[in-house]
Image (cartoon, rainbow, N blue to C red):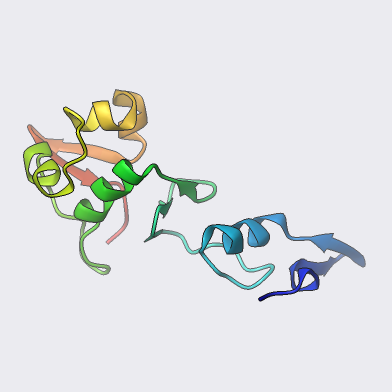
Length: 124
């Protein structure tokens, strides 16, 4: 259990409530107050990619997709087809675009690398 005063920091002589740190704790990604989120992470249904301003909460189906595609930290994310990912994740969607709500939304999270192969937009 954390006390609310742990989320108050002093900034230019003023007490400031760190709402983003509080949100991270509520959503299950714990970082100390005043410390920014890591550049990228995937934890539970929470995703942060280098080009995101803040982490995002994913639907359970999208989280299953990312879990299959995340790969190993320190190495590039694997290139995978929809059939490979959905064969394991079994989301009920017909494609990556369908699962993410359209091409533009999918491209924000998953890149088309070559015909039929996709990769999560994360750093190795």
